[in-house]
Image 1 (cartoon, protein in one colour):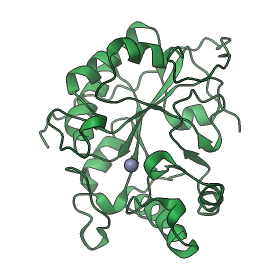
Image 2 (cartoon, protein in one colour; image 1 turned 180 degrees about the vertical axis):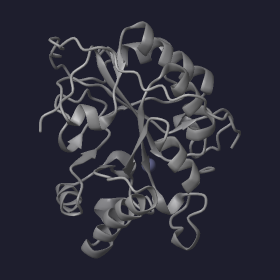
Image 3 (spheres, protein in one colour; image 1 turned 90 degrees about the vertical axis):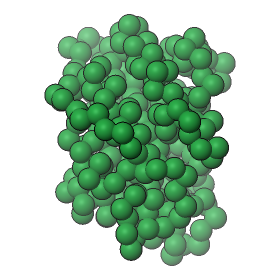
Image 4 (cartoon, helix red, strand yellow; image 1 turned 30 degrees about the vertical axis):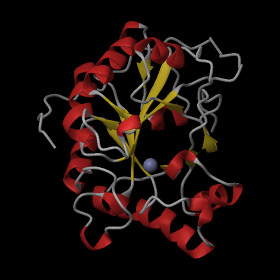
Length: 260
Ligand SMILES: [Zn+2]
């Protein structure tokens, strides 16, 4: 299934101030995140769930908002802002990093992470869930057995705990080899998301590019990124013939504003 052409897929990590050194470069302040969402609204973008874009749903200036790893501030900081705007998003969860992973804990979380209850709660408020491996290894460095385990364990535990199908994944560190992509398909995923700082010309397959938003991304640069004018975007003609559809809203009522 081929998705809509020229869809910017934004990649966030953390939305917080005072992030630890490991995540600080990719931690966008809540104020900047709110300003960025306002840019999307003011410029007439339509944030869509990944599943809608993958299914070929067309919209005026579609954009996808994604978060990697599953930091606690997705629930405490980003979700209330997304809810204010009525924007859907997707989180790619590293299952072994979750705060209450318990005996399944694996790898080394870089900051406070979501709990399973948080993950369930965000899914009830317009956030889709994809996998991001179990322990966040460099997948291409793994032998076949551990690679298969990383890919399947994260998907199956998410599906088991959330009772939702999980068909998408994002590669830790944004990188995949041809072998990793083949294993991802074998592990039951239908798509894989990378980091290539390019607009996705075709939202299908296992090397779908995303655009990095980081702490130093100014509002002006953010606007250029989503409009496809940023220098890191390769020269590609964007298809402008989007069918007009009624703007989708995914507002979901009141969200408890909790500190993590
Ligand atoms: Zn990650």
